[in-house]
Length: 355
Image (tube, rainbow, N blue to C red; front, side):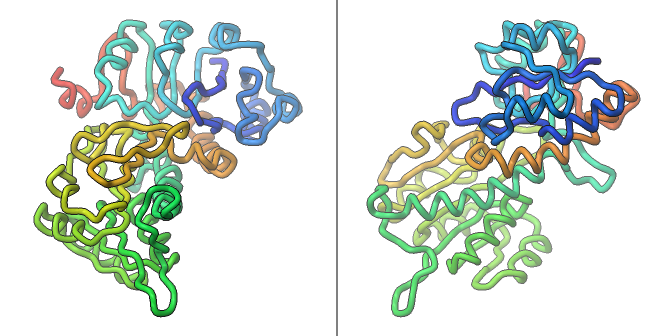
């Protein structure tokens, strides 16, 4: 299979799935790699850097998708990009199909194979392709959320870490997975007081014990509602693998939050964990409703594309190498296939979509 790297089409998405050094390793192993011109520019990698690695640069998407069978990209195909996809293609990217039945059906109708980054699980049960992006998203949620609290941005006028004779801000983190842990770390390092919620008592207490001014609480609707009453920043990092995110913040809870507080919903790419939240983009990342600021950008790591691309490429490369050497059926990626031969083959996704 020839490998193709397209220019991402989502607004504000500067990441690229494979950096030049990764491409060189694939080419040195005897593989052909094609890239759409400009695909690496958002991450600071020129066409010349890829050409130096041996990548063949093509002029547009039509040429790329014609030349390659394995399409390695960051985000799921958008409506305007579907016309380039053919039955011969294997798309390897973040897909997040559980809240996207229309896209799922469109991919099935094309007859291609789609493998989800977020569904790849290693021998230890971890998700090695999702994890680095979750780390970045968790940290960005706090860094961005802290800036939205500035009064000139519509926030409460709170400095999260406080100073002498001034209160520290209160950050509520929902979910003690990778993103939640890194949001907790970032908030603690900024000097905020943190309340971390999760259903796993051992996990939430272990994380809380590692960071200053952090309290771990076993999650319940009542406990979350109580914490939100005086929350300055809420980071919702709730994820159930392969499924729509559960709604854990109800509108009645939002009504009780302080004026100018901020909610960042990291789970928006899985449908969102806040009742009636609206997806945003980096063109206009925040909106105000009920006196609260909401940020729900589905490609949060796209704000730091250089860092994110390096981390993602490092994680993706071994799986691309294995896929090219062994094929889908003989590789570890077999269990991460979402769509194949016109059907949804992931059992969790089938159940989520009611198939």
